[in-house]
Image 1 (spheres, one colour):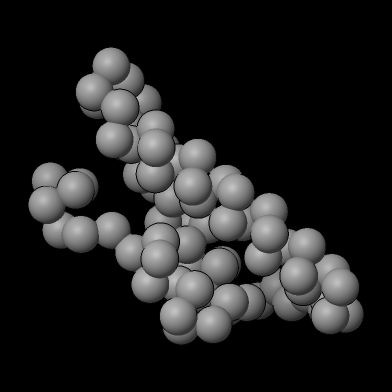
Image 2 (image 1 turned 60 degrees about the vertical axis):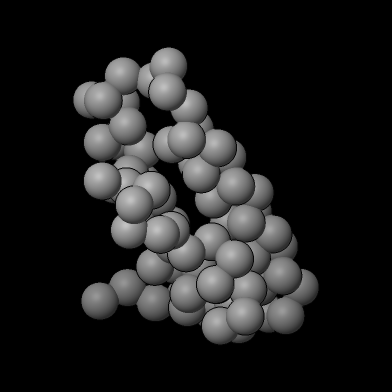
Length: 73
């Protein structure tokens, strides 16, 4: 198990960076021109970053980045 200690400013910065990355991933996943193999990798990255985001952000912020089931089928 690996841990990390952040002060409030660092936590806000981390949440900001994760939000921007998740927004970018969501827009890439909606793009039909991206190959399925690349989308699989993007999907894995999305899940990893979203799990990290849920540890730092409030539930209200997390719902903004939840994907609907039909979006990833």
